[in-house]
Length: 444
Image (cartoon, helix red, strand yellow):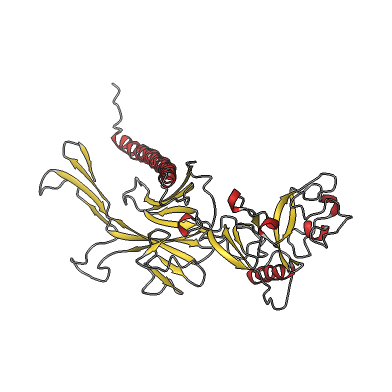
């Protein structure tokens, strides 16, 4: 007679081991699925909102035309709790970033002139960080007096440059680039004839370097000096291969620079030595009015020749967790960051459930940093409007880490960095209830 061994203990061990593995796998699948769902949802939201915004602002309105969102760009940044199959529940927050853009073409040809060059028409990029809306301009309207200024000593400097050296180079260019009493406006012109690599526009440039009748405006030291500092001249052997070169025009009149508002002809030039072009819509001989694509909150044209820090959302981020009544003690100590309650296997008091619970009651402050290119004064209108919408900045200070500003969205006036502090409450919790009959229930 064969007697079978009692394998209940082995079965219990296998169930514990493989059950834990199974729960981990299921939890990982759920976590990945939720993360992918969040990512897809925010991508769709950003794209739909960009299209809607562009359509709303491009709708015909003869009394208040607006081209600020002809090409709408929307950026979403959301910090969501990540599902966790562990006993502590949802603890970690994961960032989800999505961007969308959309264009409706009704007013793409809206003319740029002095009447339309109003602040409301500056292009805007919309950023939503945990539901808070920031409207950043990517251009501005400005003017520039055509005159020489005092630069001090030093320079010119070759890259890489400090911010001070970059500004010194700009000042030196501005003072040096004059011809016959007129300020020289420079444009990045497509490289011309393959025979000699000379730009073909504007007509003040010669077509032959050996006939330098323009007095040095378009000779090889000017055309192929890409940094316009006398130190970054392209070697002659490479000049036929580069895609663009500088072309200069004396700002003697509107016709000399190609400005014709009646025909909607608005040329683009570097007018102040920044190595960046602006779109000119007004000129009176002593000053020039323009749309400046480097003058907005965010300079989308930033490169190594820019004299300011790289703008936009910085990589650094921090999270702080706060609880209410944190200093109290005893039974009335109030909410806590995390509370776990473990019940008995069988509770004779009610005879119904085995109880296991976790609960959260706290506020997470997520800090992100946005580097501005320029402080145009909009963000310090606390309680007012910034670029047409309610200002989300709550403080404007040279110290955004004081007791009064540490929990607020704050603009540091020294560095032009906005510290975006999102206050996210977490009151989630779970309860696992199992009756004696073995039927599991989950309540949230």
